[in-house]
Image (cartoon, rainbow, N blue to C red; front, side, top):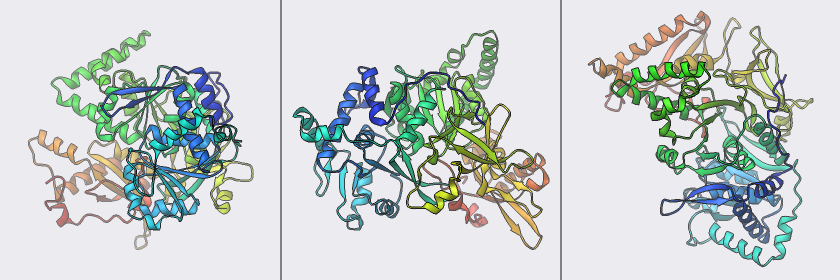
Length: 596
């Protein structure tokens, strides 16, 4: 069921060439990018200039025989050059293979070999990773360096390639017409994205330009934006969420994009760029929230001022006057002072975080998607704001829940123009995932109310089935655990105890050591270590169990000294943390313990 209707009339786009041609005409003199220069200052690139740059790079690639229908791998941090390569390849009817820059060389090489890719664009850090194993790379592979102006043996400089492309354009070389007239099939393979998710299975997701263009238009039809909006790109650009939501959508709308220098400089970049829209993942938003709350608590009268501010905001909102941004100006200026919208995806976020940011005058739209759906499936939007759901399916999608249990929870299935072409060279898995009626089985558990609002309850593969047949959703217990200020991260698993013939629910916990230290220091006590720390968390679990049905009670706790292994979208890799062993007592009492 989908009761979500378009709120705004949007222009249709056939493919990325059509999109960028339209944007270059409609927003010709608007800034498409705000780029940091070597001297630290920012300069702007207009839509008209960007469109010419795409063609310059594209004709240079065409002349070298890299287009059309050739695979072009791109690996590196978020940058103008990364995106220029992405669009130049697509507009020349190429196939883009985005690669996670955090992968180990073995995984990178496997992707190159499996996809039969013979061309890769890399930044300096990525090049250093592959250059050490140059002999192991696919035979004949060509490497383009996205950064620098000095030649490296056996590589091509992006800078030189682009400059040559401008020359080819100025002389109207034969490859110019070939590039500009390359036939684009919007329904053919365009993006080959190898996912490394929480299950650990690497799959090649095949997306078309039509898949992604549908999401762009559908999403924009319920969430307004355009010239004057400033984005700051932070999440990894190789990931479909950031590429579609944080890059392609603003280019369709006529907004401006800036790239974050690094996570270390994020707060500085926010104040320099002054974004109006920001795409992020829950963990990053919750860290922002935690930092704000800590700063408030440390300031004399801070908590009282915050409480009074919330009361004042509620009172003014009740009479139709929104003064939230002025009331909480001291908080919002940390984000540049213009932030109006945060787009959140990839995992669940605590409702109180969404609620607080709304009170500060910053709206947060929670969405739900997956790479196989390019990626958006559902979202909150300009006429739907919830703090505990992923909103409604985007216009044009058919979403249903199958195999519902007594609580209305079942598997989420999706049918529509955004559903992938299939998995690369894996017809068996494709048929297992997309049924004969065209519905993609997400593997996610959800429920949908009578208004069509979708709620996520976890992954089917994560469900713990007890000995007496009851279902336990780990994500539900993790949500309660993560609400505790002394817990940084948690992962809930289950295993059968054959001796006692019961299912044991175990909570693996990474404590928030800084919060624990602060809590005990304020009371004039030393932070707990060893057995004291165990007893502290035993009490936390006892309190949690009182609020849960007996069959969901946590029976075992494992404390970690380090964060969980995560994906690049900050989701815990369950498979990689399953064999985690409890830290021996002697280690808990050692000098390596974070509380010592």
